[in-house]
Structures are given as structure tokens and as C-alpha cells.
Length: 282
Image (tube, rainbow, N blue to C red; front, side):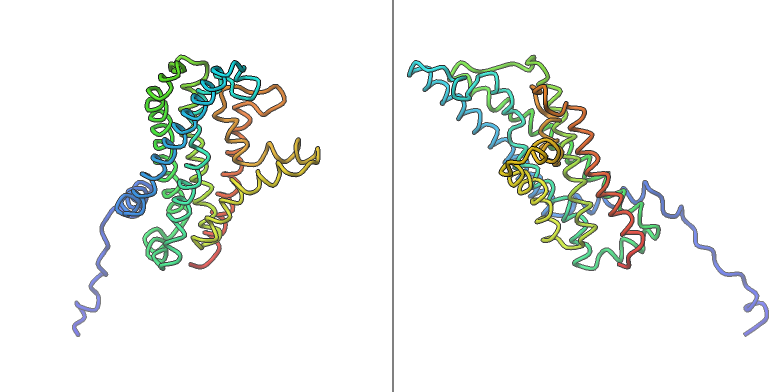
């Protein structure tokens, strides 16, 4: 080997390197090319619309029957002023699906080993998690707003049969529909964080369901004042309902307070997920 060959400088690797924009683009490609993504998103929209319209039909038919019997619907809890709430009535079920999508977005990579490729491409790790969070939050927000507006428009012909149709000028209705996107975005972030923390799809989904569905049911069954006043209102799904509520009772969390409580849940879980992502092996 000649001296000239030995002294030749090493070739430099050209390129722009890893940036958050590139990590975001990569996560967007992975997210949109999975068939399961589109199935879960379509199911979220369908379930949200279906439950909302079914609820509107149930209230409309119930009110008509009570009026035909000479009863006041409000006396049995079927106040016609509650019908606009059905525009976001499907969120209780839609949130579980969109939350599961957030879990699967990262937990599936841990279960298949793809996370090693992701972290090799983005060695600092946190940008990779942040990119996933941005993608799933934006998509979930769009799905929430589209589902709620679609529920409103689809339910109008159903309600018109009972003379109970209403317009978008109902107080706080448009605001509630727009905030439904924020609600689903926060649920998706909670799911992503749980998937990162537990690194297991089934475990993450079960934990999310427990937080959003099981705990509120258990809390409502406990007849203790400290649970009713100090725990139940601050559970994530209960706070989320206040975020999209049209009417706020005096002793309940306001829309802003409900949103901040739910955002705090998502933030705490994401911080924990970022810490474990940074410190644990993949």
C-alpha cells in the first residue's frame, strides 16, 4: 500500500442530517401507509356519527311520545334543549378508538422491533416521540371536528321528523364542535404516552380504557363526598366532557378548567414517556 493511499483523507458523509422536519415527514409516511390507521380512523368517524345520530333519534322519538301522552318531556329528563349536545355525543365511544390508535402508533413498533430502526434514524429519541405526537394529535383533532360537524348535519333530517331540528347558532355549539377536536387530540396523546410507557399494545389499550371509561364508572358508584367533589370531576373523560359541554352547572368545572385538567393528564403522561424513552434501552 503506497504512502499516498494511506494518507488519503476519509470521505465525508454529505447530507442535511436529521432534523425535526425530516422526523415528522418520516412519521407521517409511516402513519398514512398503514392499513390499520385508515381502518381505525374510519371506524372513529362512523362510530361517532352513528352514536350521535342514534342519540338524537332516541331523544326525538322519546319527546314526541311523551308529548303525545300529555307529559312534559323535561320532567323525565328529556329536555329538548339537550338535543344539540348530541353533535358531540359520539365522542364517548370515538375516544376509545382514537386512543387505541395512539397506543398502537408506538407500541406496535416496540412489539415488532421497528423501534430500533426509528431510534437509529433519530438517535436523540425525543424528536421521534415528538413527531409521533404531532402527527397523531393533528389527525385526531381533524377527525374530531369532522365527526362532530357530520353528526350535526346528518342528525338534522332525523330531528326534522319531530320538529326538533336546530341551527349552528345555538349558543356555544360551534365552539363545542371545534373543541371536540382538541378533546380527541388530547386522548390520542394520552394513548401515545401509555403505549410508550408500557411498550405493549394490549396493556396500553386496557390502561387507557380504564382511565377513560372504568374509573369514571367506579367513581360514580362510590358515595363519598371526597370522591364526588375531589376525584370524579378531575378524571380525564369527565373533565373532557366539560371541555365540549354546551351548558355548565355552577358547581362544575368550566370549559377552560376541564380542558386544562385533561391537558394536564396528557402532559404528565407525555413527560413520563419522554423520560423513559430517553433513559431505557430499546
